Length: 229
Image (cartoon, rainbow, N blue to C red):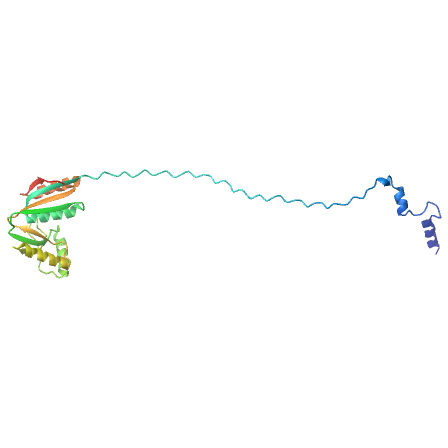
């Protein structure tokens, strides 16, 4: 009880020093209370995020353009040429055909006859060797043609395949048509005997000159003539 009375006396200021200051007393003890202002607290704005900047693609170095290939040089083809042989026999005609076949494409043969031939020969031109002639003969036999033989005698017609000899050109051409219907595409008809045969060869002039020079040495008795390309 005594302690409570002592606390009350101190609080009331009965023991000196004044009473416990309240709100009015604290306000009167402040310096310049008339200058005090109440200010509303404004919220601090949130920091604005920086605008996103799209990433810049790295610069691609410019590659050098590939070198331009030079235009191919086109060689000028040789001009066409023509050479003729007169007085050619049937065997020599077969040799000419064989030489043209081995020379490659680009050559054209034209033949004409004057006078009357004593016979007409249906045959396959010489094939260059006995082995090649035998292989060709076997192919023809498989097509149903058995009436044939290989020429063995030395000369321009050696290793040709004879398919028939006729006095009439019409009969020879009929046999030729029959052979082609069976699939024998290499057969041909040539006149034999007294007929004068003229052969004209056309092709590139540079290659034709070499071929004609070779034939001039082989075609004995034939005359080399000029013709228009």
